[in-house]
Length: 273
Image (cartoon, rainbow, N blue to C red; front, side, top):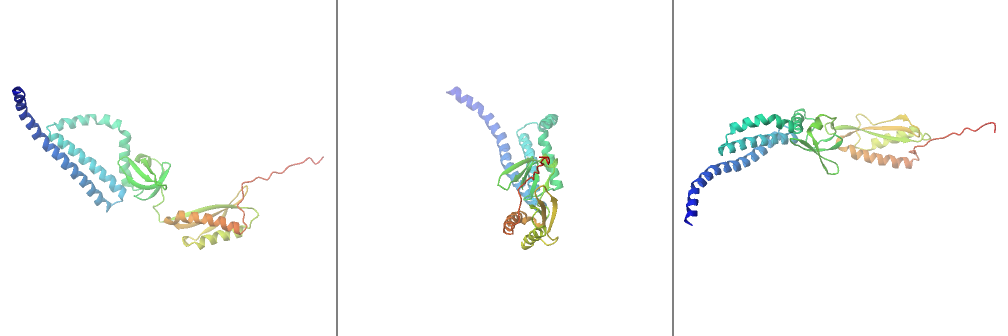
């Protein structure tokens, strides 16, 4: 028993030294972590007044990551680790790390380009990389889109830089193009009159430029019309769906035919029989 107590008493100085060395580092880590989280929120809040939310969120994440690196280096230094040697070793390993994380670094660089070029902002409806949706947020590696059926799609930032990107929310007005085919037996003047009336009767249709109805093609089975209407971007889909329904209803009432695809086959007979 005395031997055990002697060993414990002999270890006490080492334990106290370890505690005295460890607790400042732990305290620094906890306080630093809390402060960095607060700083990130403050940076995002300040930047939101100068740029869109998606870009502010991205730069806030960059600030958060840089401050965490500084914090961890400071904690290691407090623990007595030779950070100069550590940084030198990290510098030597940076090439290997860069090659291993080349896709992540590409996405990070692309994120900076998206912030600089500003092809979209939070809430814009875009189409890119085969996906369409409203921009939810821009992170270090991915852009998050929320689709119309409430799904979240992650797209690598580099894909948005290296592909065609269509932003449907940039302009306040859009042109709505509707296409409809009618029978060759129908009166095309009456068809044009009906299409223009449906467009002009809806208050969501803008009059500058005025709606346009015109024949665009003589198809195999139909005379093809286009109806072009300028509309506020916020009314685009509602007006499109409403007019498509009204065109079908009105055509049925006016006995105007939207023909099925068809072919007329003429049979040649031998005149000698």
